[in-house]
Image 1 (cartoon, rainbow, N blue to C red):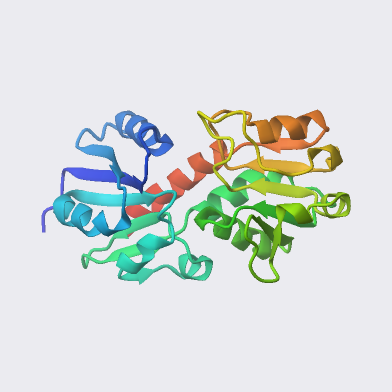
Image 2 (cartoon, rainbow, N blue to C red):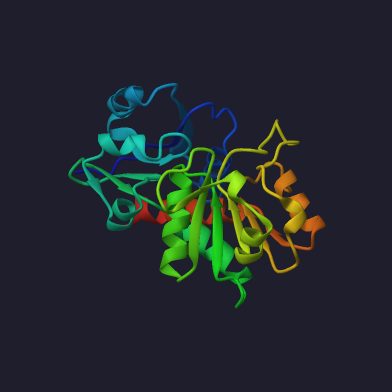
Length: 252
């Protein structure tokens, strides 16, 4: 069978007019002289529209990235799941196998792990994950793998692993030295917003990590920095997960 020359890659999401992935891969294809490759946004208001994307794309589709809010919902449409994606319960990369199957992977884990761990110090033994969406699951998986205890912080806590924002007392903040924002709160254009945590209790022992990269320094990170905390945004994680997606799409 002749190798397909034209390949379309894309990002599946909702209200993703601007996307990091489209800019990143468009630039990547230019650098690699892959003139027949293009990257588009599949901006769907409803996940039920997904099968028609696959149908219309046909044999031209080379791979799909998945973003908020479909990292969990898309799984019902896939034929197979990679072991890590299955354990996490969220997918951000879809590969078209040679047999024509759709297989789900999670490259968020690699992106998060490689970008945060250079900042981890001995006292960073516990983490709070703000939010419980698809991205938070990959973060929890990476923390567990590296023996860092964690709790999810949710507006509607459910089960032992979750606490509410009201539960974030001085003692809790003192105990959990890593705080990761996996919610969209504070992203452009609503840059003045930030997760509702007691920033006054943060110290120079804290590490604040925000999955948001636009703006570069969110209000969440800026308030942490004022208290002496180490801060890191999600830009490098996005680059690393994009490269991991590219590797998955191209491996045999």
